[in-house]
Every structure is written in C-alpha cells, then in structure tokens.
Length: 76
Image (tube, rainbow, N blue to C red; front, top):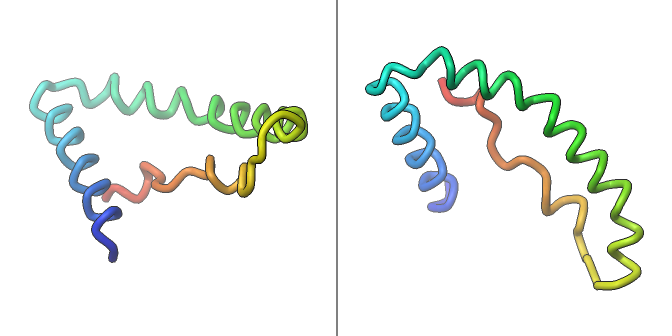
C-alpha cells in the first residue's frame, strides 16, 4: 500500500473513533446512507456537464478524477 492510502485510512479511522466516542453512531450512519443517492446524482451531473467544461478548459481525465477513492463500506 502506498503512503497516501494509509493516510486516508488513518484519517477515516480517527473520524470513526471520534464519532464512536461522542455517541453519534446512529445519526452518522443515517447521514452516510442518506447521501449515497446524492453521489450517484452528482456523478451523472458531472458527466452531463463534461462536454461543456471541455469547451472552456482542457480536462484530461475529467471522468476519472472524480471517482470515489474510498468507499465507506470498506471500513470494517
């Protein structure tokens, strides 16, 4: 694993432990589950506006840049 992935995992574990210590586990899970459909809509909006953005700036790898790097279900 590269250093960047380890740093991301440490950051997520730190946030998860803070949520656990504060007792907001249920609202945090509810919020994450609530925002899942929004990520799908957001990705479709970026694909829709991709050609328009390409008209103004050079966006090499535009679609791959916004792919989610880490999925919360992997935090087990």
